[in-house]
Image (cartoon, rainbow, N blue to C red; front, side):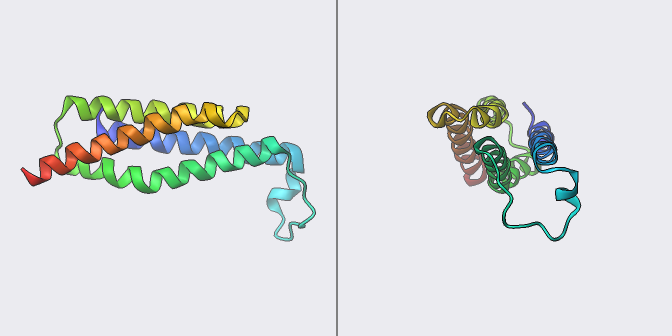
Length: 133
């Protein structure tokens, strides 16, 4: 997968997770909750709502480290088929992380997290090697 395609994919995954979070909140808290600046502290969120919110927040946090790495790889013209494969694995890992997080089985979501994290570490290694060469 090309690095620019990975950047688009990260944006799409983030948008989908945000869309799900906003719509689930409207469905469970009412439409006025989203438009109110005086949201009460007495709002009750179900465990599923909390997991949906956490999955989105985790995606934003992962974008904070993955977007600069993919941008650097794209700008430097990194050409490595293994790094491009790792990029695909990263995107797949992030794409399955959200739904696995929603299910609520903590150990299961580690599959997606592990795929993405190990892939990112490998891409960083290859990028570092190419910059030092």
